[in-house]
Image (tube, rainbow, N blue to C red):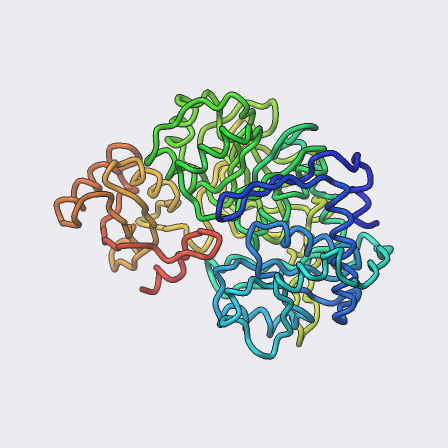
Length: 485
């Protein structure tokens, strides 16, 4: 099997990618051009000593060079390690120690962050390798790859500890077909935009893999998130499917006037739970639901608000077809053999491949607390490490955060446990105010608001204020840092 064979199934002139760079310049790439350029780059990688099984790190934003680098790795059987361009020297050194990349393909501006012991291929070198007016290395022959051969290395987000390197096999790519059809929901002829930054597992599977598996074209935008610009691009490019983070949906709901998008057919969200209030705002303004989904770096997408199924506001939806789940003592667990995107294990260059830690009866424990309602819908409660037990009550941080975020004076909020001698723990909220000064009066108003919109025992007894919250490069809140701060 080889993912590049998928490209050959499309008409060479059919649109594969629409790219918009940071200057706003637009370019359309056809499948034939994408295939030829990826083949050319594969030859350049081989000329730099990259061979089957080697790790190639990318430090490239949402640009054509990132897609070509990934495809070139898939073609020759190298292991792609996409990394977020916001990583800094310490982050890259961690990845170097774990994965020992043979080569780094990187934007020039990131040079100072890259350890000198790593071999770098700049984007200028990539351009020269693809310049047809120059002598080029011949394209590498597509490797014959087994489903279990290594393909993709993605580091976990590190919300509860040091990031780990999850290694996915070749079957991970074609295994995306289930979620691409039943949750992501792309269709033949669509233009799909997954706005996740490169380096996040959602980008690795949905920026171009999922759209192409469904016969859709993909949009890449290499620019900082701006709510108004995001909406304008959707309208101008006639985007049919939008996939973005809950944070981005929240910011759009609060900062701009939303309106109908005639070409838009579906909106999806994943990464963290999406607040019901935000879904209702989008439904009122655009006539569309936001279809939330759930997955992990290690296992891919496994639940979601499925195509042609009713949306339950605030729910992480139903299991994807064929995937077997169970809720064991409040924790979501998955049967690995039923998940087509399950990972091979954690990679460490010193220890080798560490198999996935499974229970005695062979289940993968997600570490996430959920509840299942009478209709089978799943509702996220929080990370198992994050769930707060106060006076015998189990309180999911997300519920309290959602209540706080529904207050107009709150821009962002995170909730963690704080030790308490009488109750065992109490709810501690760290709030970024919106347009008001922090004060005890504001803290009192927020406590009263939470009591009013959710169960009173969930209100934050401690309210602190901050100018920003610690986050991973993919935008997830690092609650582990807040627990010890």
